[in-house]
Length: 359
Image 1 (cartoon, helix red, strand yellow):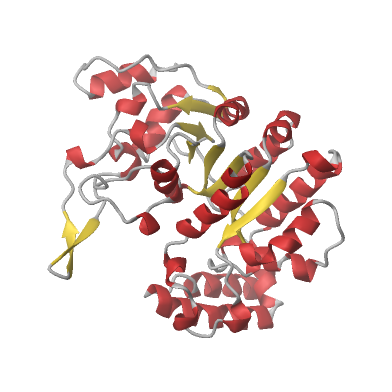
Image 2: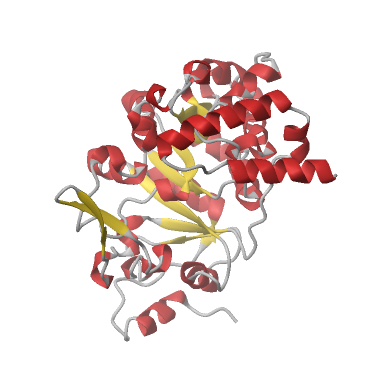
């Protein structure tokens, strides 16, 4: 039996009166289209390499009403340096695959976009555009910084802003979307979309280090609607709350509702660590319950995708059969490890290679 989420929240808050009744969940595609109608920008949090998320996105973009409302789709999984190649491919021009794959292979994030889900996304948009008038075709904007790997041989060759990539994505949105009075869906990892996080009011981040959601809220208040993706039904408190009220494929609203008045600790967890600089020394910032903003200040809605979150990784054969690509990835790992101060990719690459050799 499905319980009401409003009742659970009131009980958890000591029977405190809710801000507003929790509205019924609605089909997620209808909810996203409604958000697009009311806002110039919709931020949709991606669960990387999630088959359920990408199934939803492909269904969304193939809905005729979507292309009638949206001009641009901004994606994290594309290098802005290759925008001309992407533009040609999306409208149906012939583009060699070796050139096209540079869009997702040559980003600042290694291995992440080798999953076939990302090429499938671009192919889906190309297919949607094939049936539309030239002046009503969707444009996909590559939102990752335009890194040039050919000339990037050391950490000093990487602009410092690449450590906080959201400011680069913001500039693309301001120039290509807001500056041209267009509407856009932004598909980017969930951690990039939040308007306010734990401790932000204690120590607000500098604009260039803030999330994309925070940056848009500061510079263009009200322009963006923020939607996160949620999976699971018991291991995470937020997923447990949402899954009580929403079925897979439904969107549940947060802003202006009882859920919106709930502490964002259900999203971030209570063990979140922030740091502050005291007398030139970086020390942990102890967060108290009051330092967690209400969910309604963090985001606007959730799409619930169900209990499971299966992921589709690249085939191990991609790496086993491409020694030159593997060597280039290892070179980039060495460069980025010095830039970021940590190696986030070698273990994953080695696991893929080992899996391929066992097959």
